[in-house]
Length: 237
Image (cartoon, rainbow, N blue to C red; front, side, top):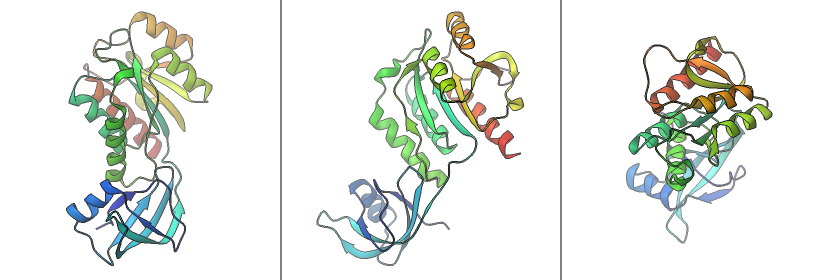
């Protein structure tokens, strides 16, 4: 069984001591019931990972102290994918974030769209960040996906293209998503009603390509997972 993973804001040097913060300490002691001598993995969310051991000591706030025995820098998982997504209602937004975090996307951009039902700029960012962090722990990943500022669909496409990414828009009738190759990609997922004709025209005018996810109309979170999973599988194959 792999060691439990705990997040630290900054990765200590080999031999250094660091105390887990309140949330991580609660999980280590209250949930995992870890004690002196137990091995753990620390990660900073930006590619740093360390093997560490609980010393049995506590800091003045009661957090368990761990000693770093070895550390490494971990490259991002290929392909590097940014997902722009119109937030769906309720718990489905949390589900989308959790799944995308487990799939190791580089960033999630909430999209303001003509047919959207949730105001992208008003999402609970603190809660979204926690979900992405926990999903990263689940996948044993060293990189926590970034939760970017909200953007319109056209702005998302322009920014991704300027960053050197191939930009894809999930839309029936496009090329099969499984035919796409690329190391750096961006995918735009529209709301339940789809992107408007105006938005599609603007995105295509900014360099986006339409990709088809197959038969049927998928929910927003399902479409996002299907697109990213397929792109990852193609890159791995």
